[in-house]
Length: 113
Image (cartoon, rainbow, N blue to C red; front, side):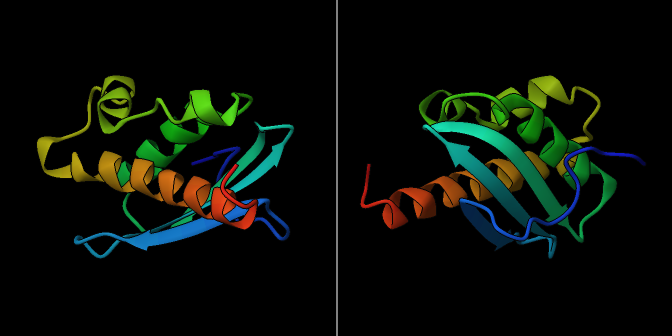
């Protein structure tokens, strides 16, 4: 499965990880310049559904201003991944939550801009 966003980043502007209740860990890495998300990478040890949700988040947020990118929600991702089985809907929440955490860390490190 080829995914342009899958992988880790050596020197991101922001990064975060969360391990969900299912045991999957998601990491998001962002390059932010002039308040715009220029590059996104994610890594997960999770299932294909977690990867699908992470890819959907990455596609949604890349090239957007940070404040616009924060409009992504689990519902947004569920719309983008319509074939997601009900028992894997939590994957959308995990992917979005990890992105939010990365932005929160970025703002803390920037002094709360």
